[in-house]
Length: 168
Image (cartoon, rainbow, N blue to C red):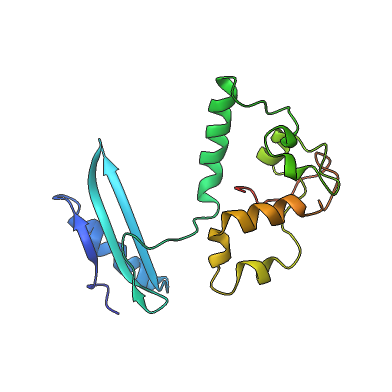
């Protein structure tokens, strides 16, 4: 696929980005990519290139953005805490009762936010999410598995990057 095969929209003044976008993705070995950007409330880029699962990548292609959401999640948590709607020193079970099992009963909301909850994964993680990783989009499956998991350490006593479980 050529980097000339970019689909979508680039506002006047953003055409060069469309060229660099696909060329960079192709050079990096990506199979498909997309981007949407707004400036002062107006969409200036809505581009896609490549394919996924044998289909053209489009602006509707679902992707897991992994760590990109962690900063936003932490910011939202802090805004909610500032407004008195979330207590970061409360047990997680106040908000998610099913979580308080298997040694996680004393886990605090702050342990989620600072990667010290000890639940980095859960048993048979890859079997649950599947080779196509569609299981990651199954909210009920993921929350049930994370809630049932045992922590790798006593919550709050260690730290480790919760790369795959932070958002749940």
